[in-house]
Length: 140
Image (cartoon, rainbow, N blue to C red):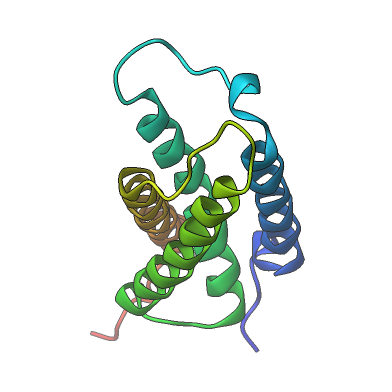
């Protein structure tokens, strides 16, 4: 039986992802006047991208722990799940006082960040598994 790397126990990314989701709900529940962003254009898009990059990374990690999908299938799964979470977040913000929500630019930043996070995870995973499980030499 193949030895599982210690960071591939699904409880680790599951707990971190649950915390990420709780943080997203909390931040999206803040009234508009309680949210302060740096004073430069599109700071909110950068914040969305960065936060969802973390979520995409954690989601890719969790999926990889549960299923041995190819890189493209894992990235596609993260893409669609993050797209749904981002849409739900934008809908949630429409019910929060002082927030507009429903911003396609914010949603696009969410999806882009999540997709980037998935690929960053995949790159790190490839490096870690390559160094911890080097290829076996072939005969001759």
